[in-house]
Amino acid sequence: MTNKKDFYDILGVSRSASDADIKKAYRSLAKKYHPDMNKEAGSEAKFKEVQEAYDVLSDPAKKSKYDQFGHAAFDQQAGFGGGYSGGFDDLNDLFGSFFGGGFGGQGSRSRGPAKGQDRFMQIKIDFMDAVFGKKETITLDVDEVCDTCLGSGAHSKADIGVCSTCNGRGQTITQQRTPFGVFQSTNTCPTCQGSGKSIKKKCSVCSGKGYVRKRMSVDVNIPAGINTGQQLRVNGKGERGNQGGPNGDLYIEIVVAKHKHFVRDGKNIYIQVPISNIDATLGTTVDVPTVYGDVELTIPSGTQSGTQFRLKGKGLKDLRSDAQGDQFVEVKIDIPTKLSREEKEFYEKLRKLSSQKSVFDKFKDSFK
Image: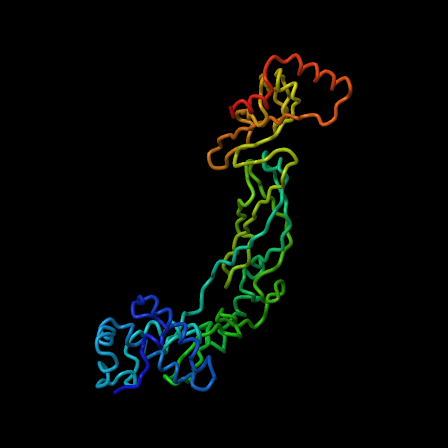
């Protein structure tokens, strides 16, 4: 009778766990207990236990037998002691994450020219600049390919040789012994940094780096209608490329400052306009500010506070469709808090002259 622990318990999963859950649990535990990662006593035995459990539960046929007969289904077989019989790709991937390589693999060859990483920055612009657009000049430090050596870093072509450390491969291969055999890992050559070349005489302009750092001014066209969070791309002004590859790009995120009165919502603009209660009652004409200048707006008699009026085409331009937004004007009735004696007498007289019930009286009548 076997005394082995239940394979599901070893991996910490239920019997209804999916293949993905089993694989995830295995990879986590294998990393945790691998002898080269964990030097504590018993970690090697725990690692073997985890590997054996996964060897069975990752194979549908073995898993079916185990679910039916338990460990007895494998007592007469070589079992895990006979060698790892499944999940090679998973284990290879796992060791690749430890050592940079897999089972005797050569790893990737030295990379050729590769584009550099992108850079990111923010620019804050005024509200009106977002409405009409503008040209912004920014100053950057950019690494560019040396014009003298064209990125080789050498004084001349004759000064370019083969790296003696990696023999031109751009990578070095190291071997590491583990309880499961010898594993190879590949790493970027520390001498040539992956280029596979050695330079006898360096370029006098870039000192062998293959690039020069330049401080430059770049003009950025900010389109009308741009909004906070939108980005502009400037080609070739990112981080320098690898092995003579092109620079990455520069991405500029726009932040639009708030306006004192205008509020933006997409391509539309909103503004509150205060008027007196007399103007709201009798009606009036006002010159409403817009981003394009004042526009005459007629306020009809009896206008209530919160009423909105639309000024067509007085919003912002839509970047995608070129459609023009609108401006919405919300009327806010300004009730005076202080009255002169004459004004107070006028309002008292007006109240007595009114033949209509007050707003409050009408409210009370609704309860009857």
